[in-house]
Amino acid sequence: MRKGFFKSIVFSVVFISCLNQQIASAAVNKTIRVVTTKTLYNAFGSSETTKNYASAKINDLKYSFAEFGISFTPTFSIITYNDFPSDDCPLSPLSVCTSSCASALTARHKYYIKNLNWLSNNYSFQNNNFLLAIQGNVFNSGILGVTEFVGGNRVVIACPSNQSAILDSRILQHEMSHVYGMYDGGCTGKCVMSGGFDTTPISTQRNIWCSYHYNQFIPR
Image (cartoon, rainbow, N blue to C red; front, side, top):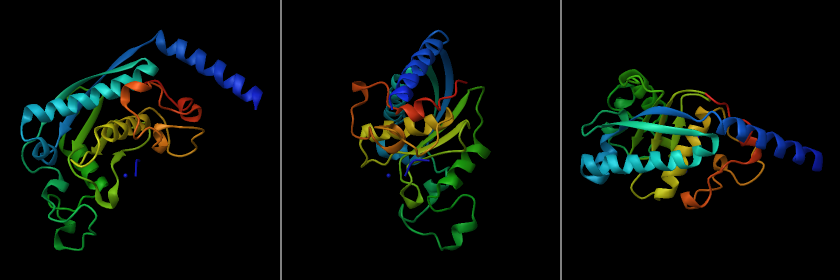
């Protein structure tokens, strides 16, 4: 989840080098269904610009995950009507929901688990490997992304209009790192898992993981 000694070093370098060689020789393509919500559509004003934005996020994801020999082919579902619980909520992103809508399925404050469950219950993979929802507002408590569990296949991220394009991409890279076995915490250096690249332009560095998280990567 994302919230707004010498011998050892030698071993790590050798291990990572071998892992890179193994991954490079077995590059794989994964398919991902991308669902964009009404709040994202509202931010861009048309299906075409919304799709272009989402496509750019996937391209940034592909850029970094090429480090592991992984590429992603997206298919897009552009939602233009109220659908996800957060789309229907009249409260501000950081409000605590105490109204009668709290128990309603289609009218709920911006609570990330509610949105993740909605994605799971209402959108199929359509034969894709992964399912991603991008919404244009912040979750309750200011959380910007959630994965169903480490190693899971469903992700929801929030990309409010006042957020930088770089941070949008880093949030997606962070959550997809969970999909590939990486946990929060334990960073041994600058790392996307601790916000270390939140202001770094995407194309300046492909490897955005510290050695601790790099070694947690699980091919799938």
